[in-house]
Amino acid sequence: MVTKYQNVFCTITILTVIPIVDIHASETILPDADGLDKRHGHPEDRSTPETRPDSPCCSVLQLGCEINTIPEVQITGHCGETFVLDRAASLVPSKVWVLPVGLNCTYTVQSAANNERVAAIMYSLGTETGTYGNCTRNRLDIYDGTIVNSSRRLSAASGICGKTFPQENYLSSNDSLTVQFSTSPVGIQGGTFRIVVGTIETGAVDECYGEFQCKNGRCIDKNKVCNGHDNCGDSSDEDGCIAHPGSDVRLWMILFIIACVVCFILLCILLGIIIYRLCARSGYHNI
Image 1 (cartoon, helix red, strand yellow):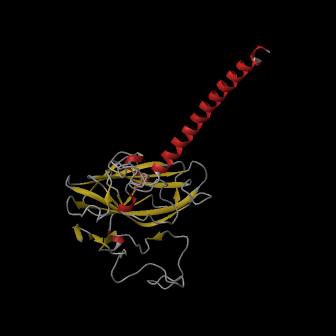
Image 2 (image 1 turned 120 degrees about the vertical axis):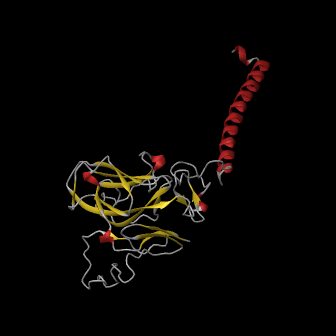
Image 3 (image 1 turned 90 degrees about the horizontal axis):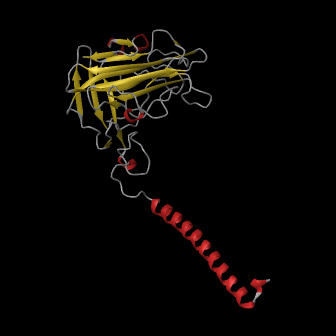
């Protein structure tokens, strides 16, 4: 299925079962096996953020235009604001590589029309990570709508950071999507990212392309439904599920342990009564 949204600068295309994101049909910006930039023929700069690699995802956003033609919004200069989106745009933290210290910035993207949803894709990512590769230095989160809480989070609970691209793209369930970017209050750090956002008319997209759609709009593999884990982030993939595999075994084990304890207590009481009666008959209870 292919759905297009035409705007002033380019066309945003949603492809189903297409494993790549091609920014321009005649150019490829990924380095080859020798570490050379195929477009310019020079060694890859490891200090620059990674652009989105080929992905096995079942649904990706494809930009039928040059990324440089898309308007750019520096979100750290507009924290707490709402951007009304009537064309494709890219979100970056700021112009400079150095990130603000102790930042907690939220930025909402809202479609100009009520019958449109907001779609987002990570185009490039290059930020610092913590000692163990986690997002303690900085983290990026994407939420469905305007409310920032775990039940509305579309991105992974661990956050987005480093140079590891998320496995999914993001599509709001209504007309808005919120980006939150935070940095550690300790130490100077550098990095950047670029999120490309666009709008899609409601009903034009085959929702989750054969996957399970959570109540918060997130799409997950159907095999992850009713597996005993909150994969959606709002527990909607566990609603109405029967006992999970293995839960009956655990329940019976607990009941067995309780029964053993009760039997042991009853046995001790019974033995106490028997011993007391034997002693009473033998006259030892008077000693």
